[in-house]
Length: 174
Ligand SMILES: [Zn+2]
Image (cartoon, rainbow, N blue to C red):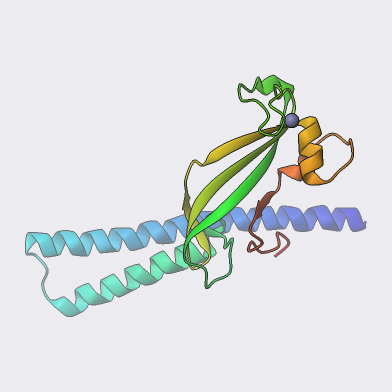
Protein backbone atom coordinates (compact mmCIF):
# COMPACT_ATOMS: atom_id res chain seq x y z
CA UNK A 1 0.00 0.00 0.00
CA UNK A 2 2.86 2.30 0.83
CA UNK A 3 4.27 1.72 -2.66
CA UNK A 4 0.96 2.61 -4.29
CA UNK A 5 0.81 5.82 -2.27
CA UNK A 6 4.35 6.67 -3.36
CA UNK A 7 3.69 6.18 -7.05
CA UNK A 8 0.44 8.14 -6.79
CA UNK A 9 2.31 11.01 -5.16
CA UNK A 10 4.99 10.95 -7.84
CA UNK A 11 2.32 10.85 -10.57
CA UNK A 12 0.62 13.84 -8.95
CA UNK A 13 3.98 15.61 -8.82
CA UNK A 14 4.54 14.98 -12.52
CA UNK A 15 1.05 16.18 -13.43
CA UNK A 16 1.40 19.32 -11.34
CA UNK A 17 4.83 20.01 -12.84
CA UNK A 18 3.30 19.65 -16.31
CA UNK A 19 0.40 21.96 -15.45
CA UNK A 20 2.76 24.47 -13.88
CA UNK A 21 4.83 24.37 -17.05
CA UNK A 22 1.78 25.00 -19.25
CA UNK A 23 0.45 27.75 -16.96
CA UNK A 24 3.93 29.26 -16.76
CA UNK A 25 4.39 29.47 -20.53
CA UNK A 26 0.83 30.82 -20.94
CA UNK A 27 1.50 33.59 -18.42
CA UNK A 28 4.83 34.45 -20.06
CA UNK A 29 3.14 34.50 -23.48
CA UNK A 30 0.31 36.68 -22.14
CA UNK A 31 2.79 39.09 -20.56
CA UNK A 32 4.93 39.35 -23.68
CA UNK A 33 1.81 39.89 -25.80
CA UNK A 34 0.78 42.74 -23.50
CA UNK A 35 4.20 44.37 -23.83
CA UNK A 36 4.14 43.87 -27.62
CA UNK A 37 0.67 45.45 -27.94
CA UNK A 38 1.68 48.50 -25.89
CA UNK A 39 4.95 48.84 -27.81
CA UNK A 40 3.17 48.55 -31.19
CA UNK A 41 0.60 51.17 -30.21
CA UNK A 42 3.28 53.50 -28.89
CA UNK A 43 5.29 53.08 -32.10
CA UNK A 44 2.19 53.59 -34.27
CA UNK A 45 1.12 56.70 -32.35
CA UNK A 46 -2.25 55.15 -31.48
CA UNK A 47 -1.59 55.01 -27.74
CA UNK A 48 -4.55 56.98 -26.30
CA UNK A 49 -2.99 57.94 -23.00
CA UNK A 50 -0.18 56.86 -20.78
CA UNK A 51 -1.90 55.52 -17.60
CA UNK A 52 -3.78 52.59 -19.25
CA UNK A 53 -0.63 51.64 -21.13
CA UNK A 54 1.33 51.62 -17.87
CA UNK A 55 -1.33 49.43 -16.24
CA UNK A 56 -1.12 46.95 -19.13
CA UNK A 57 2.68 47.03 -18.93
CA UNK A 58 2.63 46.43 -15.17
CA UNK A 59 0.18 43.52 -15.53
CA UNK A 60 2.33 42.10 -18.32
CA UNK A 61 5.44 42.21 -16.16
CA UNK A 62 3.56 40.53 -13.29
CA UNK A 63 2.34 37.81 -15.70
CA UNK A 64 5.85 37.13 -16.99
CA UNK A 65 7.34 37.04 -13.47
CA UNK A 66 4.55 34.73 -12.23
CA UNK A 67 4.96 32.54 -15.33
CA UNK A 68 8.68 32.16 -14.73
CA UNK A 69 8.11 31.54 -11.02
CA UNK A 70 5.72 28.58 -11.49
CA UNK A 71 7.54 27.06 -14.47
CA UNK A 72 9.64 24.02 -13.54
CA UNK A 73 11.90 24.82 -16.50
CA UNK A 74 13.17 27.75 -14.46
CA UNK A 75 13.70 25.80 -11.26
CA UNK A 76 16.38 27.41 -9.17
CA UNK A 77 19.70 25.64 -9.35
CA UNK A 78 21.60 27.95 -7.04
CA UNK A 79 20.99 30.14 -4.03
CA UNK A 80 18.71 33.10 -4.77
CA UNK A 81 21.59 35.54 -4.23
CA UNK A 82 23.67 33.96 -7.02
CA UNK A 83 24.30 36.17 -10.07
CA UNK A 84 26.74 36.07 -12.98
CA UNK A 85 28.92 33.37 -14.50
CA UNK A 86 29.25 30.18 -12.48
CA UNK A 87 31.50 27.28 -13.44
CA UNK A 88 29.69 23.93 -13.51
CA UNK A 89 30.92 20.39 -14.00
CA UNK A 90 28.74 17.64 -15.45
CA UNK A 91 29.66 13.99 -15.36
CA UNK A 92 28.24 11.24 -17.49
CA UNK A 93 28.97 7.64 -18.24
CA UNK A 94 30.69 6.81 -21.53
CA UNK A 95 29.45 3.62 -23.21
CA UNK A 96 31.27 1.47 -25.79
CA UNK A 97 28.61 2.34 -28.40
CA UNK A 98 29.69 5.99 -28.37
CA UNK A 99 33.00 5.29 -30.16
CA UNK A 100 34.83 8.17 -28.48
CA UNK A 101 37.73 9.63 -30.48
CA UNK A 102 39.39 11.43 -27.58
CA UNK A 103 42.00 9.55 -25.53
CA UNK A 104 41.88 9.34 -21.74
CA UNK A 105 43.23 12.62 -20.33
CA UNK A 106 45.13 10.78 -17.59
CA UNK A 107 46.80 7.78 -19.25
CA UNK A 108 46.25 8.52 -22.96
CA UNK A 109 44.60 5.15 -23.64
CA UNK A 110 41.63 4.84 -25.97
CA UNK A 111 38.41 5.35 -24.03
CA UNK A 112 36.07 2.43 -24.70
CA UNK A 113 33.94 2.98 -21.64
CA UNK A 114 34.46 5.26 -18.69
CA UNK A 115 33.62 8.78 -17.72
CA UNK A 116 33.15 12.10 -19.47
CA UNK A 117 33.45 15.33 -17.53
CA UNK A 118 32.18 18.49 -19.12
CA UNK A 119 33.33 21.82 -17.77
CA UNK A 120 31.06 24.67 -18.63
CA UNK A 121 30.01 28.08 -17.49
CA UNK A 122 26.41 28.89 -16.63
CA UNK A 123 24.98 32.38 -16.62
CA UNK A 124 22.95 32.66 -13.43
CA UNK A 125 20.39 35.32 -12.50
CA UNK A 126 18.87 35.14 -9.02
CA UNK A 127 19.74 31.46 -8.77
CA UNK A 128 18.31 30.53 -12.21
CA UNK A 129 20.74 29.08 -14.74
CA UNK A 130 19.59 30.85 -17.91
CA UNK A 131 22.27 29.86 -20.40
CA UNK A 132 25.32 27.66 -20.44
CA UNK A 133 28.38 27.51 -22.67
CA UNK A 134 29.08 24.32 -24.61
CA UNK A 135 32.14 23.74 -22.52
CA UNK A 136 35.13 21.48 -22.75
CA UNK A 137 34.91 17.70 -22.42
CA UNK A 138 37.46 15.49 -20.73
CA UNK A 139 37.33 11.72 -21.12
CA UNK A 140 38.56 9.19 -18.59
CA UNK A 141 38.97 5.46 -19.20
CA UNK A 142 37.32 3.12 -16.73
CA UNK A 143 40.43 2.63 -14.59
CA UNK A 144 41.30 6.32 -14.40
CA UNK A 145 37.64 7.24 -13.78
CA UNK A 146 37.56 4.81 -10.87
CA UNK A 147 40.71 6.39 -9.46
CA UNK A 148 39.27 9.89 -9.99
CA UNK A 149 36.04 8.99 -8.21
CA UNK A 150 37.82 7.13 -5.44
CA UNK A 151 36.12 3.81 -6.06
CA UNK A 152 37.77 0.43 -6.46
CA UNK A 153 36.96 -1.49 -9.63
CA UNK A 154 33.17 -1.21 -9.79
CA UNK A 155 31.98 -0.13 -13.23
CA UNK A 156 30.79 3.45 -13.47
CA UNK A 157 27.02 3.38 -13.15
CA UNK A 158 24.16 5.81 -13.75
CA UNK A 159 24.45 7.33 -10.32
CA UNK A 160 27.67 9.05 -11.39
CA UNK A 161 25.81 10.89 -14.13
CA UNK A 162 24.50 13.39 -11.59
CA UNK A 163 25.37 17.00 -12.00
CA UNK A 164 27.88 18.40 -9.63
CA UNK A 165 29.20 21.91 -9.28
CA UNK A 166 31.39 23.80 -6.92
CA UNK A 167 29.07 22.82 -4.10
CA UNK A 168 26.49 25.52 -4.64
CA UNK A 169 23.67 23.50 -6.13
CA UNK A 170 20.69 22.85 -3.90
CA UNK A 171 19.64 19.32 -3.00
CA UNK A 172 17.50 17.64 -5.65
CA UNK A 173 14.91 16.58 -3.08
CA UNK A 174 13.79 20.18 -2.63
ZN1 LIG B 1 43.03 6.41 -18.35
